[in-house]
Amino acid sequence: ALTEVAKTLTDARNEGRLIQPLPLDQIDADYLVRDRMAVDADEMETLKESLRSRGQQTAVEVTALEDGRYGLISGWRRLNALREISVDTPQLDTVLAIVRTPQDAASAYLAMVEENEIRVGLSYYERARIVARAVDRGVYTKDRLALSALFHAASRPKRSKIGAFVRIVRALDDHLTFPTAMTERTGLALAQALEADADTATRVIAALT
Image (cartoon, rainbow, N blue to C red; front, side, top):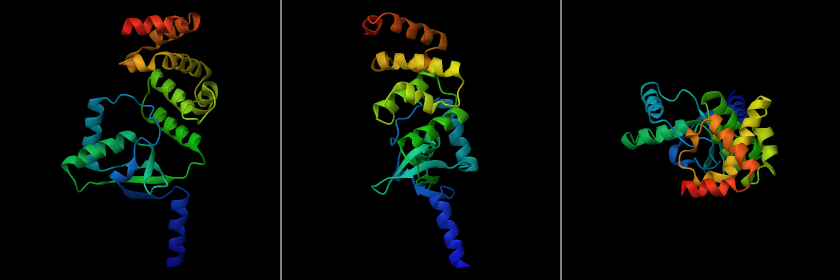
């Protein structure tokens, strides 16, 4: 019976079905380039209050790293909320996690994007930024391929809009202070202007400076 239980637990762990407590300081939150750029302070306080009163109800997802630590795949807000709580409550030093074994980096990025699409509404700029960063990291070879893979479940018009915002990310990301405040309408107009005139980016950067 003991052998059977041990095998069941081992299989559950290997298949990513076992929730287990892991030390907060063993989680690398920067394992992936995060798609969420801004966090609402009120939302974070609400999450922290929920964690204090009810505990962690949903596990984060991680993957084992070669150095013995764990790279965060999904659950960035929960992890950071728990870390903030642990400053005043040192005994709360663990996070409930499921250890996944993504076949490759593309699977990890897809898992992160899909969770945020379900749980938290991302801006078009944030969606576009993760497409660009996944390509920059060598996960995909082209923006078009990254867009199709990461947002395969999105409608064609939505993917088209994200693609337009990718153009903005490529041209202006380092120069924008509040990119997530850009409305869909403004972003699409800016993307159209960038496509129509190669000098638009230079003029915008000069104006922002």
